[in-house]
Length: 256
Image 1 (cartoon, rainbow, N blue to C red):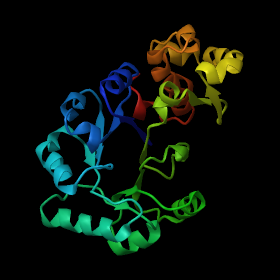
Image 2: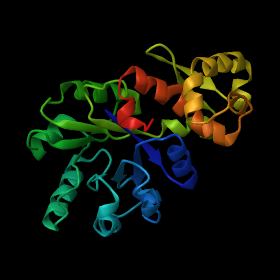
Image 3: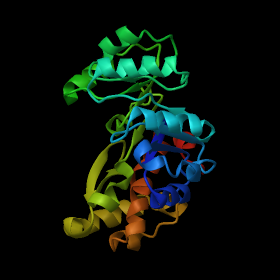
């Protein structure tokens, strides 16, 4: 399973490069002006429409920079199957026949309307309610390939997903918290003022994942001291690298 790490700016690009990440996800809002900076620096670039844009501007990027990305989703509308299907049909009519369909509102109903051929790469969008989302994912037909849009919480379901994307890797720097990999499960770790009482636990986690920290050039003390750039890298060393190694998907996601 491939993990696409969401990237929005120069700091993200440089951090993911330094951590030898292979796959990145770019939202139109952040990538329309700098997508060329990502091309050639990663194995796979995945583009999504995201929000706060118009279909016309998104289509312009898709056509103008087709050689700069590997995959792109159709223009979709959150929680709206009917409009999302209309945009998919429109794209085919105007010659944009390479975008991936996005399921919205009701995955199974949307599939019945879309009728994709076996082995089609399909993206899972938004359903109201976590329980309903999880229930429908369990019921999806096995003859298709699935990308989970912002479905980082399903990251250990390597048999269900072909790929998924996550912005969780920036949580340590942005919200001063992240998950830590711990024997096939995760624990939450807090940093800065939130994590003053957790420094002994953080120190232990850094010792456990010392090899991963060294692989991407992060010093334990810099993480403890809440250095911004160290916190940017911390989740990759403390969660994603050891998790991918244990799930046997390290080579799909990192160039070590």
